[in-house]
Structure formats: C-alpha cells, structure tokens
Length: 516
Image (cartoon, rainbow, N blue to C red; front, side, top):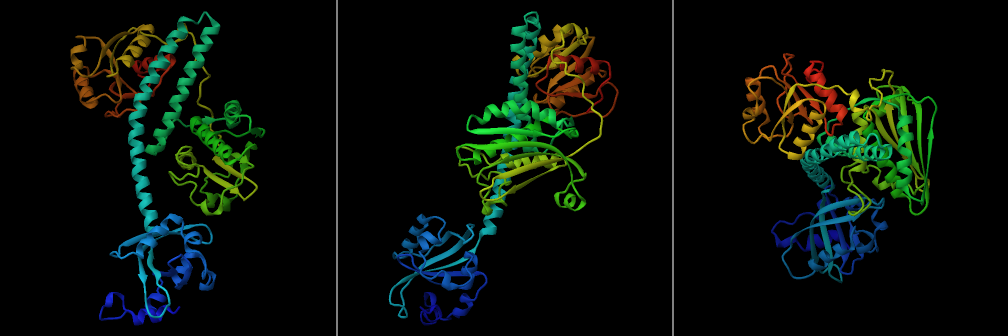
C-alpha cells in the first residue's frame, strides 16, 4: 500500500486544496496508522512507530492491532463503528508500547475505500494527549486530596470527641477499680487502645492538611521492639517476619505514631506483594551518608538511622516504578487498597527531614528504607505515668467553665474536673454562655475547638472576665493571644487522660503554660 498516493488521489472531504501527504507522513505531532477491517496493521508513519516504541515500520507490519497494540481489546469496537456509515466523531484510544507503558491518543478514525488498495481499510490520525491526561489526573487527585482533608477534619473531630469520652471514662473507671489489679489492667488496655486510635486519625489529618506536630526524641530500637508483636500477629502464618535491630541505635526527632505508620504501611505492602508463603525482614541500623548521596536524597545530616523493610516477593515492575508514590495509585484493586499508603510514607519522611528510597529487581524482592537524621538532643520526655493514682495528681478548687456542644464530652470533662476538686459550670454554647457565669470567681474556661462562634464567645467572656485562663480542647481554631496577661490560650489535644487534664488545668491556672 502507498499511503501518499491515496491521499493525493482522494482528497479528504473533497476540499479544493489537497494537503500534501508527506506533511502527515513526516509529522512529528500527528500519529497515523492504517489497519485492515479485521485488525491487521498495514502501515504507520514515523510518529506512530515512535509512540509505540518501534524502531521502524517493518516491526509493526502484520501485527494484530486489537491484541498487540490496543491497551484494551474492547476499544476495537470504536474502530468497527468507524466502518459503519455514520458521521465521523473524535475518538480517544489507548495503546500499549513495547515497554508496557500506556500512551493515550486523541483523534479520528475513518474508513478509507480508494482505487489504490484492493480492500477498504481503517485509518486513524491522532495526537498524543498522554501528558495532558497526566496533568488532568494530577489536578483531579489534588481536588480529591482537598476533599480528603476536609472530610478528615470533620471525621477526626467527631471521632476524637468519642475517644475522649471513652478514654476519660476508662480513666475514671480505672480509679474506681484500682484495688482490683486484674480489672484495672483490663481498663488500662482498653484505654491505651483508644488512645492508639487517636494517633491513627491524627496521621490521616496531618497527611491531608500537610502539617505535623508531636515530634520528640525517639528510640527506634525500642519502638520497633514494641511494634514487632503486633506486626507478627497481623502477618499471619504464611509470612515469616524477622527483625534485625543493630546495637546502640541513635535517637531521632520524630513523631512515634508517624514512624509506626510508615513501618506498618511498608510491612503490609510487602505482605501483599508476596504470593503465597514468604519472608519479610525489618532492619534498624545506624548509617552514614556521604556528601554526594546526601545531596541526591535531600538529607541534611550524614548521621542517619535507617528502618528497612525487605521482602522476597516478585519485585516492582519497571513500568510502574515512577508511579508508586503517586496518591491513589494502587496495583491492589479497588477492594484492597486506596493508593494512599506509599504517598503517606513519602510525605511523612519529608516532614521528618528524612527520605524514603527503595531497591527492587524482578525475582529478588523489594527493600524500602526510611532514613531519618540522628539527633544528639536530650530527651524532653517524662517517665510513663499513665497509671499514677489519683492521690498523686495536681488538684484545685477553682471555678471552671466548660463549653462544648457534645453533651457526653461536657459530662466527661465535668466529672474529670470534679474528681480533681474543681467547681465546674457547663454550657453547650448555644445559649449565651455569659448566663452561666457567676458574678465573681470564674478562673478558667475549657472550650471545644470546634464550637460554633468560638471567637465571639471568647471575646464576650474575656470582656466580662479579662483575667480568665483559657484551655482549647483539641487543635484551636479560635483566635490565639500572643500576650501573657492571663488571656493566653493553651491547647490540650484529644483524647486526654486524667493526668493530662490535671496537669494542663493546674499549670494554666498557675500561669506555667504559655500560649501555643
């Protein structure tokens, strides 16, 4: 077949001016392919060959366009439709290159019946719109991430209220049954599980809002030792999980919940990648990164601690290596994955001034490594005191006002404060809180961060009681004060333990906590 001749002898749509065929055949923008009505490739120009990854036209001649080129054989129905007498319409086509990548084309398919060739054939003329679709997909994912952030904020507030009620009441029950060690231990385990749920919701919110707090000096060896039993149970019998924790692991500045989230995500991904029985090894080791590698990885410190998760699965295919960290990209199918796991891992690594890298090859598995800068900063943590008896907690007799729209949250905070000795007045914020204030003697306000008209309520109360101390339950959305005149706002994250509310309230009243 001679494509040039048929274009010269049979002008498109019989227009007076005939477009020279060589302009199409030699175009670096337009991709053209001709196939028989049964799908056999007859010819193609250089641009189509290049998009498909073929060195020359002979590599394509005689191939089945339906099965060897189209990304989805069902798209052939569009080509068959072009053979029917109907108006020509624009078409979108996806083809698979010789390297397994998908290229998206937009153009027109038409039936050609000329005197040069013995049989009618189908001709497609397209432009490559792959980049355009990638940009469009990125914008759509950005919009979805914005929606995730908005939804996560609302869900986290409601969930944290529930967890605060649960944790607060479990602390109160724990105090009541402290004389029975068996029952006390059960309430403590339930309380700790609820607090862990808060860490998970906070991770989602931090990822969606691109913020992070709660970093402190962390011993990764200790963290991994505590996490190993949970991971082993989660892996089940088919996966052999081992750990290799080096000696004298340096501390890092990190949020422990974020690091745990990374390890859990990577371990779960490793298990999903293994078909049948397999092995996963988690290693924690000190490492030094040379200057050249630091620059390439964006690390600020040469002393790092690495947590590696290695599996003996099939490895990551070359075609998707560049996509694995993209939000919502998943190879697990809609029922098994959201495509957010590795995106969160990379985001967390960046937030902690570290990096995530991977090494993979077909048939020898994959190793992901989280690198975090080591720190020499002293620990600011206090010893674990979650089981301190009530008699050791700071108490008081001041009058406090609690404003929260959730009645159970109000009741939990009220009972917690009363057991510590404080006089408590409650308001739902719907009525004028000033009606709840006594004439004199109000010392402290605890306000739910999400209460409606929070700024207006604060302004009215401050006008009435200029010296009042304020604690915001949760992350404060209300106006903060940078002064130190007694009107500063102190943040108390949810859920809080009895020890948390006891210390925060006492320190705020004593002026020992600055506005955050």
